Length: 335
Image (cartoon, rainbow, N blue to C red; front, side, top):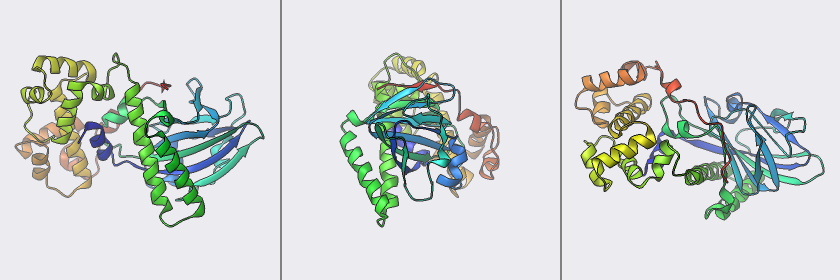
């Protein structure tokens, strides 16, 4: 399993489409923080990411502390942390609260017509709930808002046809339409992430940049595929077809941490999820992530998360929430 697929699996991503909008200039909608919409979109979810795809026409999107970002047909804007934002035909128009425009009703995909009698913009929106109790390398590496041109990718026509099909099914309330819309939304999110990774330049650092590096990406894939394996820098370098010194330098340069430190945190992250969601004993968890004894595992876990494994399992949380959300860059408008 490649590293990106593994991380997407471990964050327990769950998504759905919630809006099929026909907007006409002039229009501007103010979307609140996704956490305030979570009770309507995904009861029980603590965190939601938001995604907008322009099917036809054009519009703008802007966060309160950022510059307006233009979106054209085929573009997707993703807000991984679900920050409050404006979306409209122009940011100079007086915004209307989203709650006054979208009659959100689970699990329906709301059909909305709003605005004046000017140029049209067809906009499809989705939400994504994900686990965020343990540090997540993917979400921490993403900017608060990024734009990608999904429509121009190989998967673009297929995704656009799938979205149109899903929204038609939802409008007709066909059996299974909710499941169809969810799968389409999740596919769109994954393709947006893949497109974003491809926009990163060779000079950029971080976990996502590491995926693109031949040696570092191979190393990440190996560790995520078999985190409990008795990896050493030597065996990782051999599998990545490079030397230990080159791998260590390149890995640390891109991710800011040596390979073996990354492996330790990866193992403990897997353990944290097992403790939260499975009934395995502490010994079983420690062995599943490559520790020889329960004692050594418990020491490492407490050092990483601030609480013993047993306390974590019972619901106590250390500094993980803060670690899951380090400062992120604001906006990426890569086409």
